[in-house]
Image (cartoon, rainbow, N blue to C red; front, side):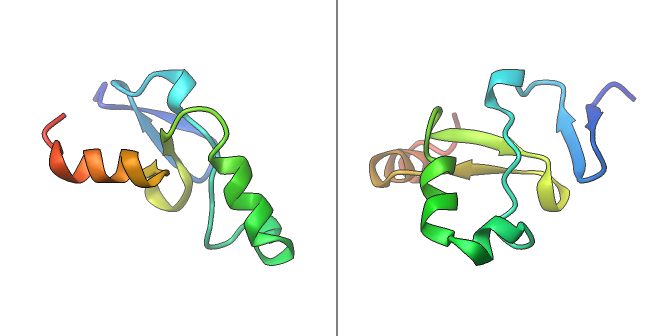
Length: 77
């Protein structure tokens, strides 16, 4: 196959995603969200403004208004 590398039980990380851009982020099921959602999202915004999470089948997470705007304008990147 060679298209993805397994990471934990939550999902996979595609081979083209650098390890520095992988972060565990589960806004649906993490108990930390229920306990303090504002803190959970603030911690997620620390570091890179765009990262991959293997949670919930794997997906990109984009944070920050300027970065979200740029992603919508330049989605081909």
